[in-house]
Length: 192
Ligand SMILES: Cc1cc2nc3c(=O)[nH]c(=O)nc-3n(C[C@H](O)[C@H](O)[C@H](O)COP(=O)(O)O)c2cc1C
Image 1 (cartoon, rainbow, N blue to C red):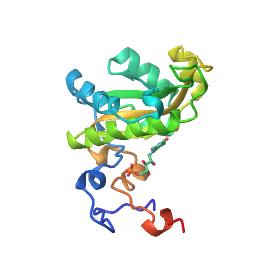
Image 2: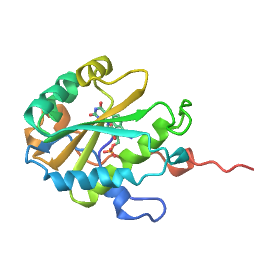
Image 3: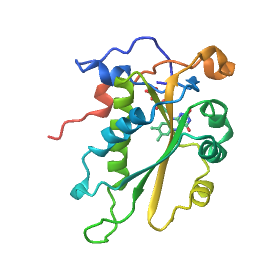
Image 4: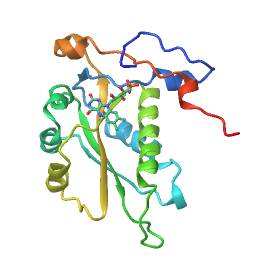
């Protein structure tokens, strides 16, 4: 599953969009125009959500001061490659529904849908996005002044253009490429 391959072959026909998106570690530091970045968040905005609550919440850094804060919260292994990315973001969600203040147990599901929309839009524009669970959650809450009682921080995300894989550390360079997936039969089961 972790094996890299140059070609992704679906078992059933799907749009190339789903196959062409993958998560590189080699980023080019070339800045992303503000309007392009907003197009990515705009794609995320139209994701479906429980009660149309839209619990997702994105914090992003594209200027040096904000990027330094974001780099500081990443685990070292991620910092090694993600520090080159021109945009680093956090995917968060509000823990409580807006209409009745009750806990929203679908927030992670909805934020996941929103982040995938962002990632697919990026891929369609020739950009790349790489999600990261490897960051210091406590540091993220304190550095960014987020309220742990109200907000979940799901993932960090690097956004940018693909860079030169030869500039990566060897262990990362050798793994750079689209990965494979488990067989469809392992993840789909009919209810009888
Ligand atoms: C929630 C989440 C957390 C992840 N955490 C990391 C991470 O900390 N470091 C990393 O290099 N990749 C991370 N990844 C990337 C996954 O390893 C990658 O998406 C997976 O291997 C599938 O490969 P693909 O995105 O290239 O198709 C993460 C992805 C997701 C969605």
